[in-house]
Image 1 (cartoon, rainbow, N blue to C red):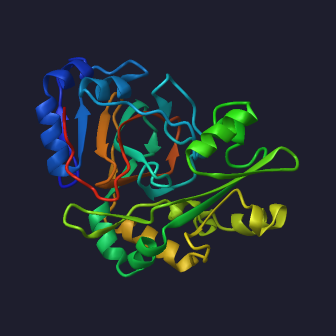
Image 2: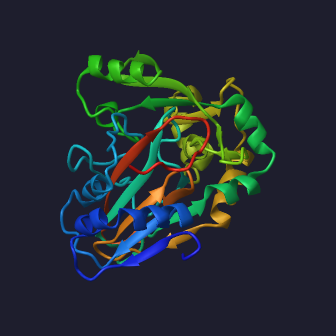
Image 3: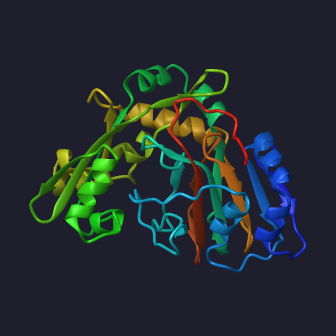
Length: 314
């Protein structure tokens, strides 16, 4: 973990108070390693993640469009993805399916699983080098995402957009550059395009999208066939294509996931831990677990440029 994360041990001080007095130390840790794990501090508040980011004088972000099932905690804090505990969440960069995303993400461990449940992290640069020439297609074509929000499957549109209003959904979708189509039985289908890659500070291409999560090849065994039979191939709950509409092969998805898994490390959570990660340096995921598990999340520093640049701290 030392190669990926700077670990800072506290002695019971309120974590947001310590962070406010040690902004330079946090900045140096993130610049050096891409992430900082704060452990041993007092961190009881449910909105601790957003308090820590606020203590760094950062602009907090909303997430008006939830891609996965989660719950709101406060205006700027929400739970980590609430998929079944038997599922692995593949490594990904937060909101890289959109044209803007948070540069920093803070996780706060509220309840730690009895077994498993580590948040996995993997270096984006190393994984991108492992992916190799596939990046050329993503860089040239980008990615198109299609969501079909069926009742009772994946995430209903009312929860994804956090509203019961179709007008509000259409406003959010329009602002995000999405095409929107209301289907029978209160089903919503959307399509939108985003980048397939960004570039590093040196100009090297970096995999930066979530096609490996949206693609049906990432579903549990047998699920794609069941969903196709139930809804039809054109109406799967989620899908991803290259930006020109051509298919992304299952082999590409497997190669991308294997590249990120190769260098992955599981963060061993302890209650009260706060982990701040550079979303463009490290992808994150989740391992299966037993027992209860709850992480709260907040995001900061909107980024939309096609190039990763050094973080400018206020």
